[in-house]
Length: 398
Image 1: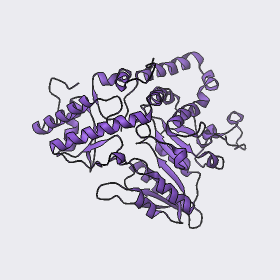
Image 2 (image 1 turned 180 degrees about the horizontal axis):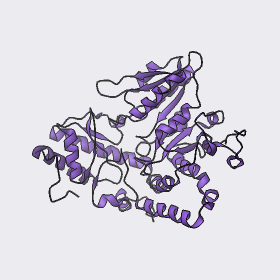
Image 3 (image 1 turned 60 degrees about the vertical axis):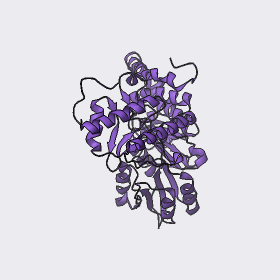
Image 4 (image 1 turned 90 degrees about the vertical axis):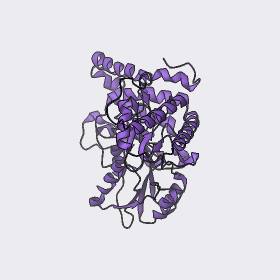
């Protein structure tokens, strides 16, 4: 059972077992697993064992919409406007499959600082008649909104961009991009993977046409849980090419000539969904919803500020912005030998990750403490000073 009320953030630490044995600072890559996820997955196994095929009609068939509605409540979307996909690449493919290049309007505008999987996907659409315009990053590795605005013109079909850049944790303001796209008649698709659950977000108020993200990271929901939002009035007009029987109003008629699509977000789904992933996602979504993203954001801003102060004291380099309104949940520390140093930390049960060009990414969440940040920096300093990049010493950092 979860705490009766949100209470102090420290009261939530017991809900994440890994925190009792590991210094966990990698939520931008994989959020810590809630202990309730194990119970939820056991419920899935018990349902399969005891209800068998009846589980489809009792819950499973509509579960993508159930989980999607839990996501919707966190990202500011109406119920029924978010559906689930295996990952963000497949979610964006579903959205792109609703579009086709016509006349001069055929360009996908994206940014070099976006996650590479997305750019590979966009470029794979070129044989279908799309053009791809990649906005380069600046010397700071960021692509701010003004560069995106300048790349949008009457040839633009869709602007696909990240709310938070994965390398630098830089927050892009979507509003001028959406405004410019709307002015020229283009659509927008916002990737909120690195913001959902750590930065307050309201896709309805922003007016984006599509938004994609996942539960893997700050939403603590595990893999297999990408999601896709479509603006409700737009959703009713969409006819995806990447589709399947889950999108149909009468799937069990097995009629190949009946292609009537659902009116809700499941209109954008395709084949049989990964039900165990949905069970895993629900506890994390409930926790984040109860704690509140506004509250999580305030804690995150204090933690990133503290971490940047510690980095400065050590004289280390960081590409992370010093504007607190531009930093999401991650601070990158670009120390010498950053890749082997990150491995040295992991060998000591201090979990971080490394990305080329920015160094070690440290991503505290609402369940982390300031004392843990101090220990992380002290340990990293020891690893660098001793060049201890291999196995951990006999005494672990816990």
